[in-house]
Image (tube, rainbow, N blue to C red; front, side):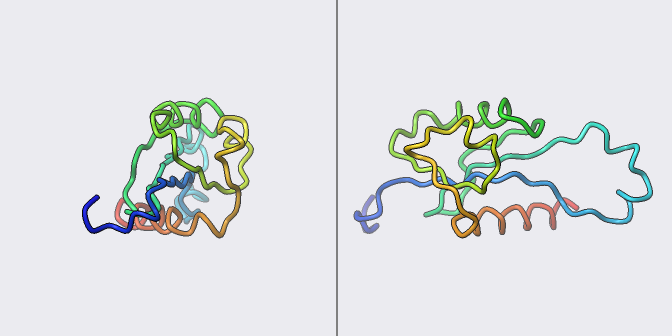
Length: 117
């Protein structure tokens, strides 16, 4: 770790689902939105880098696929918003719910939507 502060060595990940904002195309062509896909990401709060991500439906199976990519991180805490799929999959002793902890990932989602939209 070199010169990095060793007191904050516990890794933390933020989960969030990116859904994009409604715009006029959504209103004009609602029939094209039948097969929606969601991007769910895990972000390291210390480095603000994406650790893992999956694309899928808005369900626990998609969150489970993401969690499988992160199971090797034994000392990781999971900060999420209050979406029930996270509570179904993530271990409760490592799962912390609250919007104040997901600011970094929401900003990352906003940047993703901005650059891809």
